[in-house]
Amino acid sequence: MNMEAKMVGLQGGNVLLALVFGVFLLISGRGRVVSTELAMDYQANACPNLEQLVMNTLSAEILTDPTTPAALLRLLFHDCQVQGCDASILLDSGGPISSELLSEKNFAIRKLNAIDRIKSAVEASCPGTVSCADIIALAARDAVRLSGGPTIAIPLGRRDSMTANNVLADQFLPSAAISVDLMLNLFTAKGMTMEEAVAMLGAHTLGVGHCINVVNRLFPQKEESLGIVYGNFLRLNCPTAVPLTNITFIPNDLSTLRFDNQYFKDISNGRGLFTIDSAISTDPRTAPTVSRFANDEKYFFQVFSSAFVKLSSTGVLTGNQGQIRSNCHFMN
Image 1 (cartoon, rainbow, N blue to C red):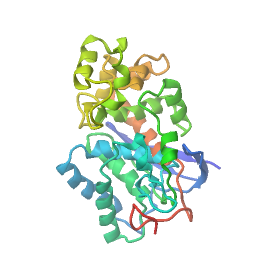
Image 2 (tube, rainbow, N blue to C red):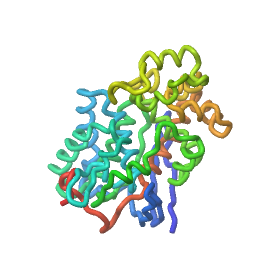
Image 3 (cartoon, one colour):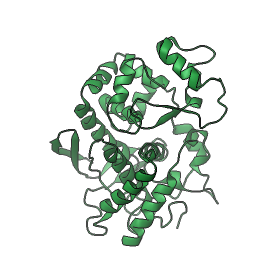
Image 4 (tube, rainbow, N blue to C red):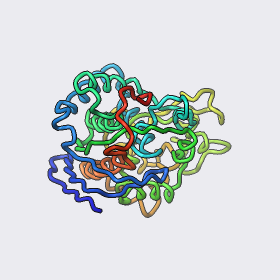
């Protein structure tokens, strides 16, 4: 069992990865071990215009809602972390299915309608061919690119889960207060290096954080690591120990709509929004990588690209496993 991966192109900040996948083992958050057979050209004959369909539909979504990329990148992680990258997060409750969206840790998951619109466009051109799991991965990949990030080639061939459980989401989705040790364990279990694990947190460069995930740093007393100025800024935006609503939010960094290395610049200067953000900037194992990413965006893009391929290939279903749903929210 093996996987041969070869980097075949590097121009500027964009890394093009071509992976020739043999049969190998991946372990998801739940512990699912599956034989994976993903390929770069998986849809070359069955749906040759797939990637253009995804890009065109997503581009239109972003024009109407520029926060879409952050939502789709988060959707991918939350899907892959529970059972693997199998679109289980999209299944509605019914019968044996208990929607993962019932988990409190999924309270801010959104833009499922964007996935639905992409799926509809793909089904109109290539009916019954492309899984919802592949669409989530492609949409997240293109969200990064359309926000100014690297162009990443990912293998396809994922199939959709026929199970979902909100209890598993509660169990396997990490909190914003995760420690550096647990964060490294989480990502290295997916085959990532320490640098790739830190790069994945760079996804925080897009979007916002919610007060419900920040107040533990502010009450009953502000953490000293926040400093006076940033601590007061957070307390001003999150003034109560129990947020009045779950939609109260704070920007993750100074460029929330652009995928760049601003996140690493901010946390290097003491402006880490979440506990883990501050922790990786001071932990001796991760701080040098944070510093390098802050000073070298191209290198961050390179490492993030390889990490993204590993994340989006976690615990996938292939071959005759699962199914290709015609409607992402229900089993066929």
